[in-house]
Amino acid sequence: MPESLDGETAIVTGSSSGIGMGIAEAYAEAGANVVTNSRSLERAESTAEDIRDAGGTAIAVEADVSEKADAEKLVEAAVEEFGSVDVMVNNAGISNIAPILELTEEEWREVIDVNLTGVFFGAQAAGKQMAEQDTGGQIINISSIFGSVGVQGRGPYNASKGGVNNLTRVLAVDLAEHDVQVNALAPGFIRTELDEQTRESGDDDETLDEADYPYYGYDDQHIENRNPMGRFGTLEEMANCALFLAGGDHYMTGEIMHADGGWLAFGWGSKGR
Ligand code: NAD
Image (spheres, rainbow, N blue to C red):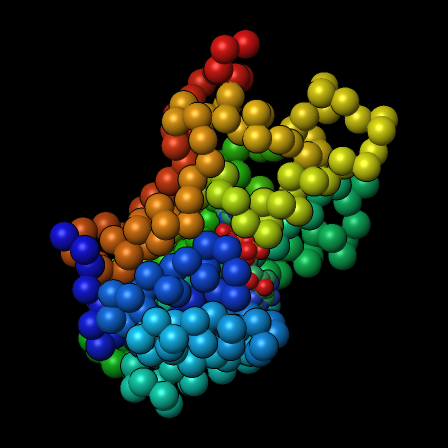
């Protein structure tokens, strides 16, 4: 049965594109009042406008999730406009690629600040509001399969997502007394701007060849061969998982839901090789 989020308020960070946009639109379709977000008001507004055009309810808030005050601003805006925060999706994320021995402090911090510290700020701000409301709530942190494995050249991203997984568990334990469930959704390969950026890394470096995969870029064949389901996941599939988690009717908290077509389950290097 499709989840109904009728009358609930959901914040989705980084919802101007990709997985976050898919989740924001699905939540609105399920009846939620949605707060869309991006570092650019124009980009956040574009998703909110699409939602309103489709008959849903949404406002856009410009905020940088790596800033504590901005995370608080998101929650304040939701409460001011809709009266509550019932679902918080910490989705905003970035990545970079560099060999770990050459990685600069700045490169390390920029990813950790958004992907891990940003999730903490978002969960804390929403968690405080949910505890005050005393009506429970759902916090969903967008992790990654890369939170469970080490992939060459992606140190800060892998570390941030591994951190998100265990942060999810501790948040679940700490917030259970307030009836707040906290889970993570860990996607496999989904076609988005982030995927595009990662996919193309190294394309212009002629010193790299097949043996360097997956240090730098990858192509469709790499992903399809490595994945038991033989394909990328879709935005709709990710939104369905996020809808299920937001519904709350699942006795799950502190859980990492992997939606990856079997990528993590697969013990071999590549199908058919
Ligand atoms: P995306 O680039 O389309 O979306 C990321 C969004 O986050 C963008 O809208 C961007 O503007 C926003 N953002 C970045 N930094 C921000 C900040 N400081 N404050 C506010 N917003 C910010 O990419 P996506 O693939 O949809 O990524 C969404 C989430 O899914 C990320 O956490 C990513 O790590 C995760 N993920 C993606 C994949 C994939 O294959 N695409 C796989 C696993 C996990």
